[in-house]
Image (cartoon, rainbow over all chains, first blue to last red; front, side):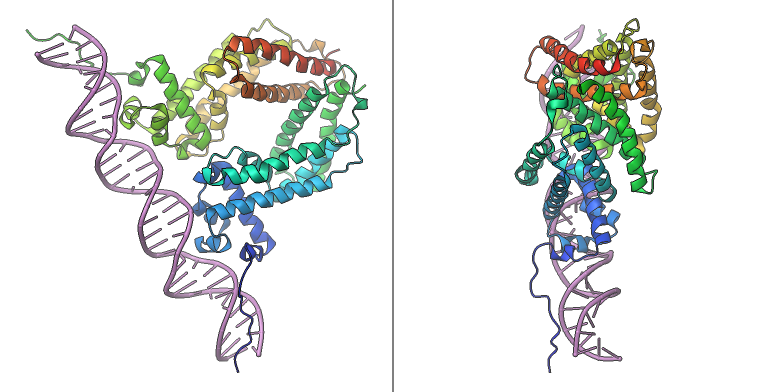
Length: 218
Length: 218
DNA sequence: GATAATTTGACCACAATGGTCAATTTAACT
DNA sequence: AGTTAAATTGACCATTGTGGTCAAATTATC
């Protein structure tokens, strides 16, 4: 009597990798993203990635058929994260500051698991390698356009002073938010509880918020 | 009768390079800086530098005895540029906004000749290569400390609202300035006359300035 | 026309690259 | 326990890229 043990007959793409347990997957993803952010596609080293992620060369090329394949996977993974962030946005919140504040908090939580996704997608748009340039343009650029549309959808601008140039005010708010965000991320490592840090973050942000509101709002 | 043609008997360091005419020198400097900014010390390629700067491999290693030697030269060159910027600061100008505004203008002019110096020095402090790490810490870190001291020296803070947290206000001003600066640099290429662009720049900056002043000042 | 200075690029030994694959280890099943 | 499939390994490969050298050619200076 022959064995009826099920053989793996055919696999869909990435199934080998997606089968891994979450911890291992996330380590590989984060290590790879970091390498690509630091060096760009061409100069990023698969040797370095396997060393850092503590897997063998063979495994990496079992999970992904090529360096480019890995890169495409990471881009799509990053896009999914951003998409889910968009979905979390509460469109009933019409106060620009509160809207921005919530997004900042979301980002902080994402940062805990994927510290470099945002950098990765942002830097990918500057990528010069011919091998991935077109694919990036196709997949990433559109997501940013959709993003700015959603972030500012349904905002109540009647609270702004009449004299103020709202576009410039928004720019200042953005620059301040990114500056504050960078500063926060540098401090985050000294906290172990992200929830606690979130509280501190909000309290601190409110002070910057107040300063800008004093100028923006009536 | 023997020739009395002067022979080059001994040379001080960098004399070969400094002898070149300004145009050629600056091209090499800018190409090299760009390569180091993009790739860091280890991964920056001397082959790429000579190709971009349109000189031969032999020439580069005639001017500089090694890649590290070139890097050290560039760091020192960058530091000189920043030092001269500090010297231009008018310490009699006690209005923070005007002080910042002037520095921004200076930077804009420096950008015309050396588009990546500031990026270069900033990114050098993040350099991980053991070969240059210590040298950078020694030479670059101190210059930044001196910088922040000079930039805010002699500023009149009595114009600020009593309720405002001045440190946070300065942070916001800085973030706004850098954000605006980046935006300006992206636009600068469409102008050929930097003086004309400088005027436009000031006019535009004043609008952002006004918004912040409305919150910062009494 | 002679001499010195500058520039060139083929060349070197060596390190790193993305990717392969036979062999081993681990897991899943009866 | 025994069998079979799946997952993992790392030595290995051809190829490209590295920082740096140097004899020869070119250019400049008298």
